[in-house]
Length: 496
Ligand SMILES: Cc1cc2nc3c(=O)[nH]c(=O)nc-3n(C[C@H](O)[C@H](O)[C@H](O)COP(=O)(O)OP(=O)(O)OC[C@H]3O[C@@H](n4cnc5c(N)ncnc54)[C@H](O)[C@@H]3O)c2cc1C
Image 1 (tube, rainbow, N blue to C red):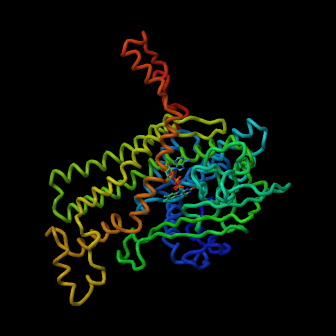
Image 2: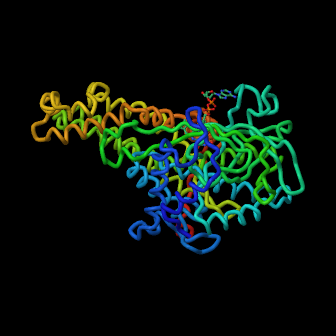
Image 3: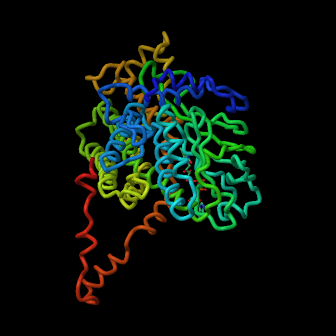
């Protein structure tokens, strides 16, 4: 099933008010989360548009019906390539993060990890999860990934914390379900999602088994409170009717206050050995999603920089041309890492096709390292106007309009009206609250940079490289090429 944007919003408006913003309890009709709802709304709109069929939509592997690709479990490299393309298209349309990929990546992690736990422990999580997913597909549900716990003291494990609620954990096991308490943080789009997919955030030890818990729960369920921080461009829409001004994001601290989770929605309950596996499955899938999202963000920054150069009449200057080419490198290398990750991915025992972790992590790491530099290029090319531009009202003011119309034109081929639009856009992209959000998200989203190092050190074969050096140094007689020879992309029947 494919819901319309209106159906998505109508469902939200029926939800129990459990959001707190700026000290007040509010409903999902609060204007401060509207920019985020607008962003999510696009994922319902384009899925209904025949021009985007097979990219934004796909046949469900569960029901066979057409569903939103964000709800789909990838079945082959083609699915991962289409997901990557889809996320880049959305990023370019909404000015950045489309927010719905986190739910997709959480579903991917749950599909794989529930199967693996069943294989080891004889549990029944996978069948339970597939039943839940069928309902999810039939109703075109949108969910968060609620993974990051508030964590308290970073050097203490969950069970060692003074505050037991620093991590979400099981406080009671009943015949018909479990009761959980704790706090998650930074959870994007939780304020306007249908469901929360809750996963562990880190590796766990035996003492932490109460913290090994995964489940799905409606976002307005009894016992859930969200303290939400919306980010959008500005109170007053100075960009007028331009598309960029409509979109924004919200992140929430989610408090689970003795929340009852019915058994049919519990997908991990005490299997502490799988804490790390579940956490990494989400993170690695999400790092592959970044290979679509981050090139989209680079496209926006590159475009803003090119327009700023045009407005300053410096587009042909050699240092500007060189700087613009850095965006080409950043976006396409990240995209290429995603493509490689898709075609060298692997089918897991659950049937879900999973991206290659090494390519997903190196791509994500590069984009995290580049992000401040990319914003810096925009600043260098734009000059100081993005933080010193007079307010929009002054461009309309009777006494100031003529002065400012002359002030704003730097390239005689560009009108005052268009020049103002360019500089307002550059301000919004490079010097607004959204800018900070994208900078920090670029570094920490999907895990702090050290997590990519950890993932690479787990999966990258340094032994192979040592052997190359041993051979070339004359320590070893021959070089074994079998790993490279046998490294074949998952083409053929597995591509589609
Ligand atoms: C814009 C944005 C959106 C996000 N959206 C979501 C979302 O939708 N869902 C979700 O689940 N999460 C989300 N996150 C959370 C994101 O995954 C985390 O920010 C990230 O994992 C880092 O965790 P942290 O913020 O707690 O920082 P920390 O983990 O506290 O990291 C801070 C520093 O401490 C270091 N550190 C932490 N622990 C240790 C340790 N034990 N030993 C040594 N060093 C340590 C880290 O390496 C890092 O340098 C979002 C984050 C951002 C910024």
